[in-house]
Length: 383
Image (cartoon, rainbow, N blue to C red):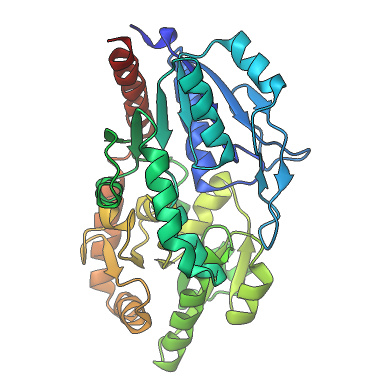
């Protein structure tokens, strides 16, 4: 069997209408699959003005805005006849589901009805979300539902070993492989650092820029981020907060860090410049299964202080390429950031070590692992 024998129907709850790390990885994957001759068709909710143009052929699934605070996201409840007809014409031999939502379950039912193998990819720690919206009591239920979902498929691909350990702890028995994430080493590079750009945001050359990178949503740990910044100020650590990204919590977060410089949404080389112009990336989020922003900062030579959680623990070598801190330990976060701000030798050592480690993460080699997984499930299914 060769790559051109594979016909993948990829189901995503958000392929391109709101930009996030998960769909950036999926679009990178689809681009690689197409370059290798794999036949791919993507099925996802769409909007009139998406965040970016999709990679590959995208078939729209009817959907509705998510109720509550996160109305920018959409949900679909089923696969309509138009999608079934499109699938029949495409004739996939592998179904790939990227999230445990309604259409993910519907895609699994379609696969079982038509005798097709299913690969699921894990991108996000969904079970952590309820705690940020005063619904923490739902977390055990979400874990139960996620476990059932991943046990319904033929293979799961996750970004790192810590995610394998997590799923096994939950009781997932499905074969699990690693599909890591890569980084664009031209975009994310120390050479992109630009002090003039920092000055344009009001950040002086001698101010230690504590950076946040990502969508401004509460589940990224914005509350802890702001508490740590207040602690740094109380301890007399000169710093400025540099926020790169946009999101529905922008106004709320702005009230918590009123002295921050908000650079807004950045992309391409502008994003690389923004990351390289930070002095430290502070990532208190526990929701990522990998943490693309951590890898991007490392590639740019920026030390990282992150929550000791999935993703970060696979990337950061404690004390060498960054610091790992218990997720809600405000004082420990502040102490590690202060160490980097005050010790130039330590700072340079972590900058160099992180940059060197990031060199090993290359998209093409990493995405090839998914093709290997498709081959594996097809061979098992044929027996």
